[in-house]
Image (cartoon, rainbow, N blue to C red; front, side):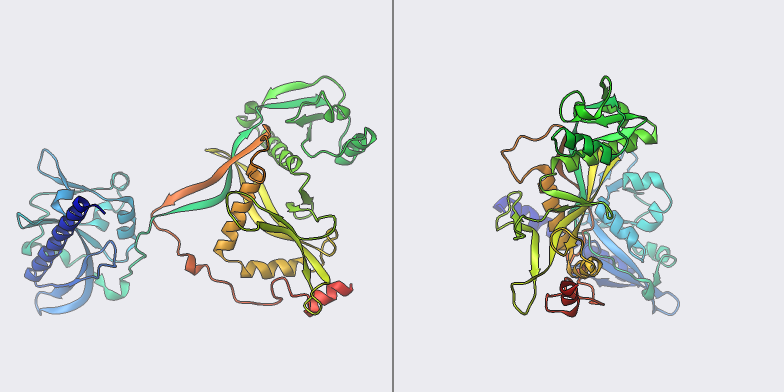
Length: 447
């Protein structure tokens, strides 16, 4: 902090401190009890315990107080004072279980004004949107004469709830933005009606199967041209070309579903060399290596050895005998939102006996590892899949123009999430990915 900034900060702190002391003097003149709150209580400077005027005894009923300096307030032509709350402060005050008094203090003039924030904003949408609090220069004077106004607002101490202090944070979602999708959809008549028939035709032509096609109304659809190999072998008749926007802006549900199928098929086609699809659970997972050795992939700019996307799990006794294999996997869904297309990512795992056949105990393994994984592990997995689909595996590869991804969507929030509350769940039932020496793992090996 520069010298001038330190001076400004120090002067502001002294003014705010003087404002709190002025507020305390006024409360004492009212014959109520003022208690200052520690500095760590962001958003609240103190509380007022109401004293019964007739008996002069504390009632156990409270109000909370936030003090602001006069310099933070504007004045209109009629002399009213106007203070604009921050979104974070307003949400914090309105969520506290006790009414909050906003007190504006003019230290030099020894004057103050106040408003019950809960009462001012209650049920008034326009005020909530503007976040403005207006103080009348005489009716809202905060002095000893205002003591009786506080009596009806205070609540019992049992109702006092201090919510978490506002902690702004940027939250990253699991929504990967589609930066670009093909501008054109190609369509042509076909006699092929099933995937099996399509793949049989391609094999007869000496070509591998494809994923990026869809059927509707006796027509074949794809983001790839249908008048050249390999897809020309699947059509009978002339090809037509439509703008993708026509389907995207259509009000027909069938058009939206068709686009989702084409986007999903194109995603599988682009990553066919690495990924396979589990048709039962509808997720993509990394294939096994030919020699069943562990496979690591490094994406993005992070260091280290990369993430293991496939690998054996060995028994504890010998440390050499594979018991089962774990594949990184992801459930995915294309969504059209107001901001455009997004790919929702939900990382998971796929388990096999030998790299190919599904493990009979996959559900137990998955349940166990999900219990162990905390927030950071899930976030890391989402980032990995986002980087992978974005093409960060090979920064020099030419991106495919049919489907390109941008960044994970994020949102700025006034109240962050305490990562420490994402604790590991207590263990119940089978442990996560049982060690190879366990009965469950040995049972599978013996089967």
